[in-house]
Structures are given as structure tokens and as C-alpha cells.
Length: 547
Image 1 (tube, rainbow, N blue to C red):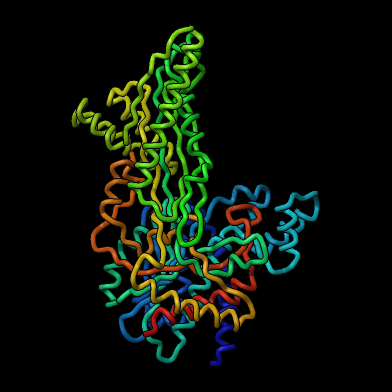
Image 2: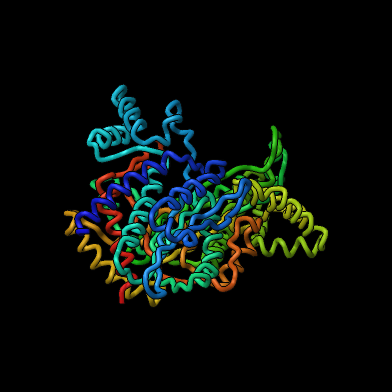
């Protein structure tokens, strides 16, 4: 078979699989998500290679009710060296398609319907761009087509092309996992199972290629890329405790809202809190949630306010973030108390009284709970956690547990509890490992050759800007980091339980590109995704397996 013929077969297969898998709905947490893995396993079982080697195609239990599973497919060559191709199959909701929701997972009819809708009315800038893309014929719509079933399709096409080689050197292991859109439980459970899979088949995993999608609003240059790392994410919270007072006597208490406003001012979109590393800068933190903790109308000032932030990082670890957040909150609390004291002094015509406040980490709060209420108090918190942990909103779960812990500890305001409200996604980068240094030049040669062959451009990007399964794929976190996170995250359901013996290997992200993923106009760029991507993934895998 000529190389041109192989490229043509891979391109056609990628398109076929992309459209097929998109027609299998798999919204995160739905029964469809649980059914998807068996549909994919059954489809792969009918291909020539896995009819010959059925023992190399199987599923791995993940989580949930009904149970979700990951699909694992191994194509063997010679030797032990192995590259893992990985991607997720769950998608976000189809609700934002409105009346077109019945077509959300049927790419070609949906593209036609969206085009018709856009032609029928005045458009904003994003909609005008979507119409231009659809009319070009280069873009196809569909929930999950971009994010990221076309990435999975490219991985399968590369796997099948490898299986068609006469004497392939090395092995390719393909994995498709659920739940990336929630808290990466699919990848984390697969990661935990990977050492046993490697032992069972005698594999030496030397590299991983994540297949997730990226976005580019211009001509696609930013999307035609090999990403060397994935951004880190923390979700620090501040649980503010004031001293409530009747609104007619505002200076007889301490305003939790004033304190929370100062914390938000000190954190939200402050550029100095960005990270700079690898020649790129992370976005500054933003406030995701701000609410007082009470039900119903009351003329008393609120005594408890919850704040949660999204803080993306390129270099700082959990200890750095918690220490900096503690310092920022302490300074904001001091500013708020001084301002309220000064206002009270001017109102009453006397000297400020100098109100004192307290900032505690969640770990320190738990120590106070135990000191005051003993094992019974800790057991009550554990019971509450079990009752809440089935929920999908980590901030709600964390908020209720912290509120209960504050009550158990008898904390009086003004005070602020700080910790982490949801799962931490670790920063990962190819340069973090010694093995990664040597792979970069191999990828560069593959990229240059693929770009020449397809008449396009492909570039390195340092950091994949959206949180991704890449954070848990081949990454073995430090025990001290996981311990600090676990101690300061209220619910164990939103911590990463890291077993011993995890494998560690360098990873990159090579995936499709398009625009507006998660939105109604989600669309994939077909020429690159179906033509260039499966070739780039295949050649990159061979480069990792080479000497």
C-alpha cells in the first residue's frame, strides 16, 4: 500500500468514525454515557485486527450508576515500547440547542439546520463567523464532534494504520474514557488501572498523546498545534464569617459582605496573580461564585458569605497557592475591618476601636472541630459528606460542609476559612521529565514533515489553556502536594486519591481544532481534522517508538 493510499484510508476512516460516534449521545452523567463504551467496544470488535486478537480489546470499570467504563484497545508490534493514545467520549449538555436539540448529535442535518437558522435573522459577530464557516463547507457542527469524538476517531485511524504495517516496532495502546467534563474520573480510574494493564501485556509505556480539541478564532494557525503541556487549575474558596446585626444598627456587628467584597477586589482579574512560564502567561483568577448562606428574607446583615475562585497556573503548586491566597485574604480582611472601624468612628464621633479578625485554613478548622467536639463532631461531618457527595456541584458540597464545620467548631466572626472547593488539575508539561526533553525534537521533525506533506503549518504551543485529562495522564503527583490538597478540600469526593505505583511518562496533546466548543455553534474544521490529524498522530506515535 502506498503512503498516499494509507493517508486516504485514514482520512476517510476518521470522518466516518467522527460522524458515527457523534450520533451516539454521551452527555456526562447520563445513561447514554454509560452505554457509549459498549457501543465503541462492539464496533472495534468487528474490525479485522480485533477479530484476530479479541483479548486485546476490553473495558475498564470507572464509576457511577449505571456504571461507566473506559475502552482499551492494544495493537502489538515487536518489543515492549508502547505509546498510549487517549481521549474522552463524554460531552456537555445539548440543552443550548433549544428547538434543534433533537438534531444536536446528527452532524450533517444539524449543520444544515443551523445554517438555515443563521440565514434567517440578524446576526452578532460570533454568529456571522459561524455562518461564514458553515457556508465555506469546511466546518461541520455537532455536540461532541469537536470536543472530542473527532480526536478519538483520529486516534483509532492511527491505531488501525499501525495494525496494517507489515512489521511494526513497538505497540500502540488506545484508551477512550468517560467523565472529562465533570472531574476526570474516567481518566483517573484508567490511570490507576494502567500499571496492571502494562504488567499483563508486558508493556513499557514511553509516551502518551492526548487527543483533545482546541479552538482558534482566526485562520486555524493556533489550532494546528502540538501542545507540550496543560494548564493547572485550583479552586480556592473563602468562607466569610461576620457578626450579624440588625440593619438599623450597622456598627453593632461586622459585615460579611464588606469582607467578601474586599477579597473579591483583591483577587478577581488581578493580573499580578497570573503565572508566567514557558514563555506564556496564564489568565488571572476570577470569582466563580459569591453568595450569602441564608434562606429567606431577613433584615439582619448576613453572618456567612461564600466565595469561590478559579485560579489557573503555569508554575505554582498547591502550597504556593494556599499560602498566597491566605495572605491575600488576610490583607483583605484587615482592609475591610479597618474601613468599617473608620466609618463607625466618623459616624459616632470617636476613635476607631480596632476590630480583630481571624483567617484559618480548612485543615486548621477541622482541628478546632475535633478539639471542641471530638470524634462525634468529625463523624457528623463525615455523615454530611456521604449525604452530599453524590451531587455534581462541588462548590455546593464544599460550601455546606464548611458551614457545618464552622458551626461544629463554634467559630465567631469576623473570620474567614480558606481552602480548595473542587478537584485540582495539576499543571503538566513535557519539560518536567528528562524523557520529555528528547521527545520534543522528534515531534518537531514529524510536525515539519507533516506540514510539508499536507501544505499547511503546524506549531508548538506550550500550554493547553482548557483544563483537560492530560493533567492526570502519565503524571505522578508529589505525595506532599496531594496531602495538602486533601487536608484542605472539604469533601474527599473532590480530591484525587493517588495510589502507589502509578506510571509516569511524558505526554503531549495533538487534537482537532474548531470553534465554539460547548456552545450551540460548536464546529470542527474538517480538512485538518479528517486529513492532517490522523497522519500527524500516527507519525508522532512512530517517532515516540523509535530509537
